[in-house]
Length: 193
Image (tube, rainbow, N blue to C red; front, side, top):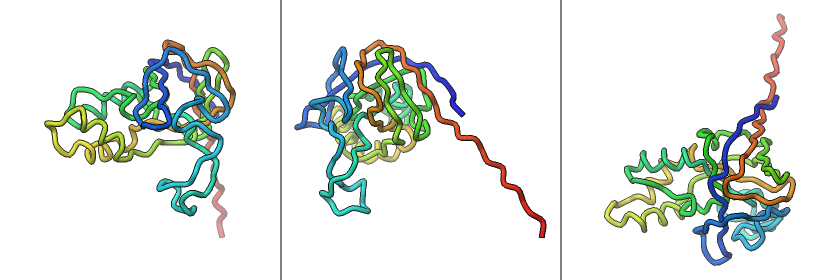
């Protein structure tokens, strides 16, 4: 039911409340709600374009307290876009890991656990949007249409969003234990009529 994967924390990042691009830190404290001071911090948030079933501005639970990307998937997106690199900061990522190239496919309910005991609960894929594409475009002004290309090439590679299940410190260089939730397949009996 659970598969254990080991990875490495390549960076921890925070965005102030005025901008999307994150900046790299040595250590951040994960609290219930995310990283205090981060743009996406909070137990609740206002519904937006990603929650069309609610009227915009409706207060809902914040499933995107922390976002994680893999360095391998960042490299794959860059290669598909025909550019040399994409930094986690440009994607607004809070954590970058290496050693798990299929991070975006991690199932909801999986846990990401750090040496301090900090634990994040995977809430699913972070769907690509135009905002990071526009940031990438600003670093490659001579290559047109990169913003739209990012959305297209980042599907299934954009990383995941998480909530904080257990607070604690997360440091650049930390080993990471990923406990991938692998539900058992239920065999259905076919009744003969």
